[in-house]
Length: 358
Ligand SMILES: Cc1ncc(COP(=O)(O)O)c(C=O)c1O
Image 1: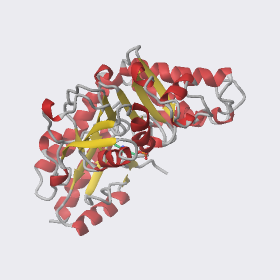
Image 2: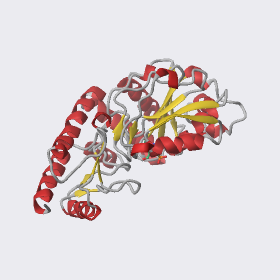
Image 3: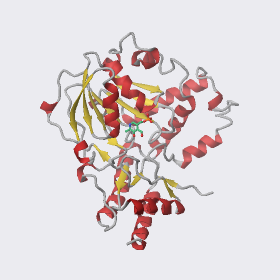
Image 4: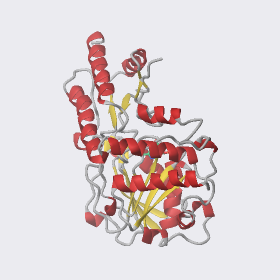
C-alpha cells in the first residue's frame, strides 16, 4: 500500500528513510546480533547510541556547554509539573497563556507554587500570541513559562519575550523546525513525537545552574538533579525511542540542519497560507503575525463542509486533517518530515474541493 501524507498533530510523520533504516535494523543492529529493543541500556553498544544521540542534538541545536540534555519519560505533560517542582524555589512563577497547552501548564503549576498569568489571548479564542511589556514581568519570579508553538490553535511566537528571569519554553511542536538560540532560555522541553521521533521520550535542555535548584525531597524520578546525575539512566530509559530520535537527527543533519529546515518550513507554510488568503472558501482565523509554520488551522465557515473536506481528503491519501476537538475546523500539521510534495498535494486538493463545493 502506498504511504499517505499524514497531517497528524502528533505522533506524526517520520522521514521515510528513518523508517526504512529502522526496518533494516529491526532484527540486527550493526552486527550485534540483536535488535536495539533487546539491548541492555547499560551495554557498550547502547550507551554509544544514547551518547551519540545527545551529541547530535547538541551539534544541531548548538547547545552551549553550560546546558545539560535529559532524555525523560512522561511526555511534555509531566514537564508541566516537573518545571515548578524543580525550579520553584521561591514559590512563584509567571505564565503567558497563548493556548490550551500553556493553560494546562499554568493550571498544573498551581499545584506546586503561586502561578501568575501575565497575559492571555483567551479573549479571542487564542488566535494570537499575547504581547507583553517588560514591566508586566515579575523580576523576582522563579521563571517565566511560554508555549512557543500552539499546536491546537496554530499560533507561534515570532519573537520570544525578553525575560529578566529564566525563560522556560514548551517547544514540543516546533523544536528542530527552526533555529533556536538556546542561550536565551533557562529550560526547553519537548516531547519527541512531532519533530524528533516517536512517542516515549521527552527532551529537557536545562541550564546547569537551574539543575541545582531541585529540592532534595523530590521523588527521584521527578528530580532534574537526580536524572542528570544518572545521565538520564537513573532507571531504564526509553531505549528504542532514543534510537529513533538518533536516526531522525542523522536525517536533520543530512538535510542541512535547522537553518535549512526553517527555510523549507517557511515555504511549506506559505504555500498553504497564500492559497487560503486568496480563496473564497477557506479562512485562517489566526492573526497574521502569529501564524504557526507547523500547524496550519483553517475553516470553511461550515462545520459540515469541514467534515466533508476531511473525509474526502482521506480518499486522496491526505489523512488526519480534522481540527482539534476544542476548535473544530481543519488543521494541517506540517512538521519537518512532511515533504513539500505533501503540502502541494493538499493545496491542489483544497482547490479541487473549493471548485466542487462552491
Ligand atoms: C505544545 C504541546 N505541549 C504539550 C503537549 C502534550 O504532550 P504529551 O502528550 O507528550 O504529554 C502537546 C501535545 O500535543 C503539545 O502540542
